[in-house]
Length: 427
Image (cartoon, helix red, strand yellow):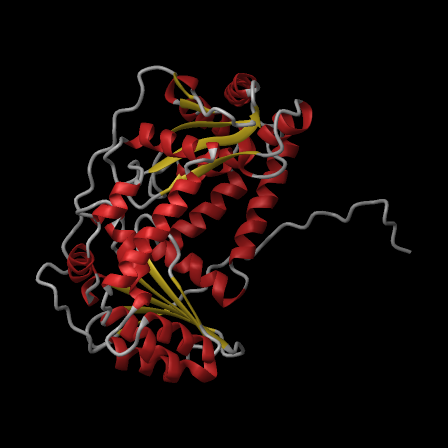
């Protein structure tokens, strides 16, 4: 009989292999990365342009251009596009991304012949209607004003501005005036410059057979660049200098019942040699529910309901920060405890049991990321757009499996020093 009082043994995760996509090129040179799962009845197509904040000539134009693609094309209004895609059970979305413009189409395999042509029209013949642009500006300005009442949002905006600089693509904060200043001419110029075939990647997953490949070539492979500056390289500005000592910024927010705390520093992108190790260290520190920060500040001290640390890696740079919200008056105590946990990681090696738990957790997360065509395509897209390969994916799994307590302690000594962090409290 099964003894339910005894936990089942933990099984090692083996055979974490990233499926290798088939790569084809359309007639105009656009690369298409295909993950074919013949048993699936869904098709996911994601088109990616290097057209994010680092490419902007004007604040918010990257976000506005990608979001406005769905609001009108050569032969259809935005409402007609939405109705048509919905009629065939499809979905068209534009997720927020600082570095790229990503446009996703989900379709049942039996309707790809109906949906791919409209998808191509949206990407190749947008009209950027003035009325829809005004609606976009008004709606987003109202949303922004609502967000600016939240202490968590104010703290995040401030800490990223301090880390990167007020005028940096990753550091500037949007304002109502930025939305007001956008014009249709700005969007058209940005689109012509960055949305050509020579700056395009396509990822197709699910049941991607010859029919799908043929449709993509028919509707995307014949498209030519029309903009005179299409495909130009972005000029990425240098990051702001970091603080010479621990700097604390306190922003009052009268009437707030809670204090938002952000503690952050500049880090780096995934191509940095220390990224994989810091990824594991961050998980131990505050990257999952059993982390040091959760165990101490939430469970033992009871200062907050939720606290976490995150390692945000962008295409050109990155930042590492801790975030939480506490009762008014508990901000300083929370900050002290965060730095106390950093000190412990610098001064004492992580225990074998704790490290083994984190290894299994992270390998499980990677395994989940390879579950099915939709998840796997996200991994492949992330690697390709960041200039990485399956070798870097394998290096990450190897680091998770083999990193030692001594290596983690050395990383903590390098990257968890209080003097390198900005501290922002709002409330």
